[in-house]
Length: 62
Length: 501
Image (cartoon, rainbow over all chains, first blue to last red; front, side, top):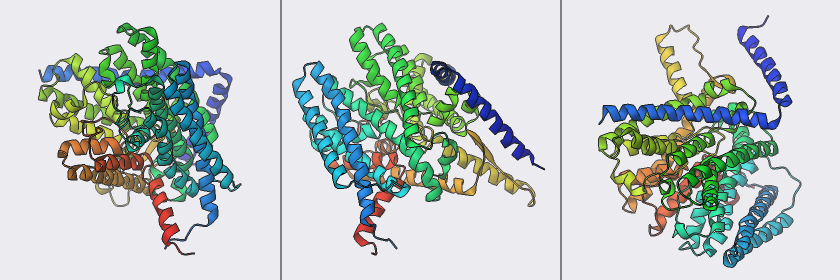
């Protein structure tokens, strides 16, 4: 009998294997585009937060 | 009790250091070629001499110490600890010969600053620095950045299992690439991709400011190398303020954030694992501390009256927080203004951001966000233990590439690193205070150097005392090596001198 955490680990390993297979089948430029796009989106999200904070601080401390 | 190392250790360390020196010499041939292409004979000769010297020394050393013995983790730590200062001395040769440094020591400081991706500078007349020399300064950040990622993945992570404590905090989430060659190949792939795209984007933004296309491309390349490797060197003395361009600033902020993310996170992004970016403890802690310290910095700037409108707060304030937190060191305001115009809260928030730094196994310095995340989780776990019944089993876990149960060893490792960094900040600031620097500026500079950030309040300049320069150089080295590699070097020397046979 397996406990839930072992099940989680196995499921995670299986999904990792699936991901790896998918990754190998994709051309490098697509991996790069997707990877860089994801990181750029994350960074732009952080900057958008910074912009909102700037507006809020400028409004609160005129 | 220390045991005196046998000759084999010295041979292996010497052999691998010699190999690194040869590669460093070979790297100098690129700026030499650029100088030749631009017809700058003196600069080409300086790089030719530097390259020849490094390659000669490296070849002689490799022949003298040739050995088939492997570089195990302890020898690797000592080699890494010695590689940065040795590399700095040799990389400084063309810098000094360029005539833009007062002494060999200043040139070596600059080279160490580049190789540790710090960005503190002692160059004179930066705005008239030859193209090849500027390229070399920025190239050193790439070499040092690649070097520290490889060292972190191949040595620091295995050291956690060997040495037990200091690096336990970072080891789990970097199981992506245990092989140094694979790590190098993979890191190079990301560096080239970001350098290419970043250069194009920055060049377009710089052209829009009125720079000619070749000059814009040159500036864009150097700034991209600096931002993606969280280095901090800039092609002009005004740093990013030179451009007065929001587009340049936004692109640089994106590149700095990308540079502060670990190889494991980039790898996850490239394989399409979106969840990794959002669940990773390092990313979450980095985002939370950046938001908190960002608010503090912005409020401090607004209250001091330095920046009161939203646009300036974003362009100056957010840029400085991103630069500090990613430990890059690019700036949009002159260094003195950080000390004189921003009050106390904003610089204090920036000091906190620099101290925390980026994520483990990136080029960013500082304590590393994941360690603070682990400590925060440990505190929450302990509070829950107090509040729940005695029989309750309280387990804390975190996500770093996969789910991990937080262990006492990891918490002890994170605590140790934090303590060592705090001692490093204190020791460096104390030296600066003894030479007459103001307390707040001494602390700012000490944290900036130890965390390999590179922002400066103006304490560091060519006329400052040798004591301050030495303390900051030592801080850059110790901080970059995250202490243990430097301890290994001193332990090795102590064992050679006083160890039992």
